[in-house]
Length: 347
Image (cartoon, rainbow, N blue to C red; front, side, top):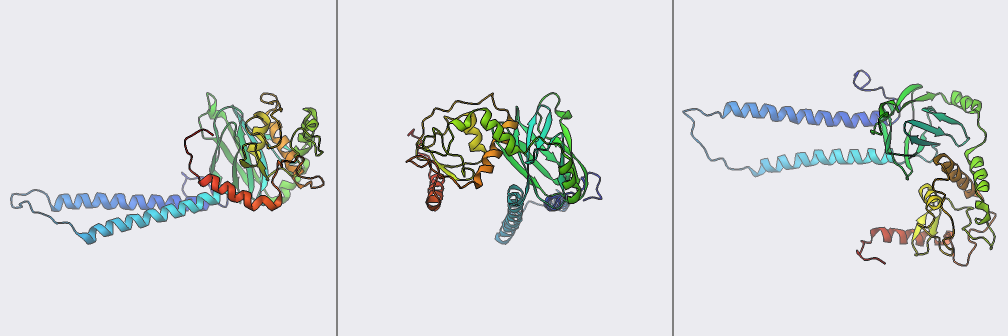
């Protein structure tokens, strides 16, 4: 594909796989388009009206109908399975991925690394290591698009989206917003700089950071008085957050949810949406108070508390988090809830 000027260079591990599927679709489409066109011309000439030719009754062929049903079905299944496998591969970041957090706004990209290094309209990444980008929009729908990586992901307001890639070739590549987002949409561009691992490590060390994202989140946690309620002792008025991230949480209506990024964000900005079992809806909303960058820092701080196991996970007689022995049963319950069809009645 690199020899064709209409295609960008392949600079990620997934780029070749995407191009192979695309080329297969193009070849299949071209083949059948030419086949049908040639057959139309051939039959138009062969069976054209002439004075000597009389109309004949043509009976169908069972074998022919089976053939032109089975072959397209087989081709369609190949396309489906190939595309599905590639889609799931693209949508599942590896566990060892380098995490980067981004906020899209009219009309710029803002990125921050866990160590606190920040960039605007620029993103530095290493070769040979997967990079997971967690993105959210501050205003309207945007789209994170790096053609050389064959990566494109919509960036939505009020919801975290993830995209990942593993760059293979050092260089500088275009970053676009591929979703029309306003009058200056065409100016919402940036660049991704791919570096060798040692050069990237040196770049990280040279970056001027006031502190890690988790450290900044801890300061915000103290600044907004979150420690007043979210304490690990029995007098706490809010759930204990130590070891919370990634764990199942039981709500007042007996539903069970996972404490992921989106859950934590919703709990801060709309705390009455999901009330934790055993607690009262007394938390004020921080909508309009905490920016998207600050929210990412707070989440990073709560993530950093996930390894702190010195305090008990539950600080109420009604557990807010699910104990380890309950996790298999909770997962089974969540699967049953997902499979259950809605009754159409309000509870």
